[in-house]
Amino acid sequence: MRLPPDLTRFGGETRSSRALFALPLALIVAVTLIDILTPASVHLGPFLIAAPAITASFAGAGGTAAIGALAFVAQVVIAVFHGGVTTTNHEAQLAAIVVLSGLVTAFRYVTDRHRRRLLRVRSVSVAAQEVLLRPLPERIGELSIASLYLAADEEAQIGGDLYAAVRTQGATRLVIGDVQGKGLAAIGDAAVLIGAFRGVAYRHLSLPAIATHLGSCMCWNWQHVPGGGRNCLESFVTAVVVDVYDDGPMAGMVNCGHPPPLLLHRGEVATLDVDQPAIPLGLEVPREGDYRVETFRFEYGDLLVLHTDGVIEARDADGAFYPLPERLAAWKGGGPQSLVDHLHADLLRHTGGVVDDDAAIVVIARRA
Image (cartoon, rainbow, N blue to C red; front, side, top):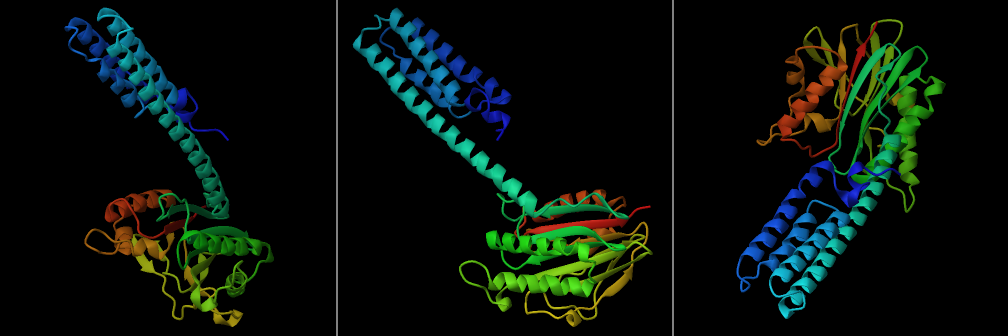
């Protein structure tokens, strides 16, 4: 595994940190000259230990040891001008520099080794999460797609929110969902649903059949998790499954208890509510008749915005929710990626730079 540049050379020094070596070097030169030029009764040599201590704050073990060695040489020079190296005072100062420089260097070495291990663990974690939640393609079928994922956990790339897109017979099929809960269990549940969604793409099932399959998979998963199953009533996933048809400006969707998508048409925002939303996936063992397809027009130039509740429930400092429809209506126009970039920046401004819950946005447009 290849490490980042800041740990592959000089024990952790980067170009910017190497420029900081001027500070301990200037300290060594200044202490040495002042000590030589002052009377022998004035002892400034002990200040030399500050040089390797300062260096350890920005450089690696190698750089810290090198500055410690220079501090030792400077103390020897001072001793030569003030009575000799073998005097008790100078022997004590030299021993102190050796011991303290060695301790600081050893501490920095342990810190660097721990940092390398942490980087390896993070690299593996990021790779695993990218496999679970693959980036959506920029183009699929007749659609252009842009997406955004904000994880509430700073150390994670994904959480309990999910999205995926596949080609099926005569349509492009997308899903966006939100698993109840957080942490590793939610990530695992999201992975199960995404796998089930992709796994039946080749079967060209209807939207109700897809929703039935996904709900059954989640129930089966929760009842057979290692260490004891979970009741369906205790776990669920809200989701929207959308088919954008190839043979006309129409799309269909099944909403399973999820926040409704928004359609931006000629500068006006419409909320795609359904008359009878289905229950969330996995809440009970489903039947195909439990799900109803809602159709709507989706023309060239329109933008379809799928999102999770982490977006619309994001709060500002005063506790106000993020007004997604209003922000869409005020948008100046452009393609899916432009809108996603705008919403990303605007959402972070609204929340002060952090989100308390996972948030996902998928923006879709028809293309010629």
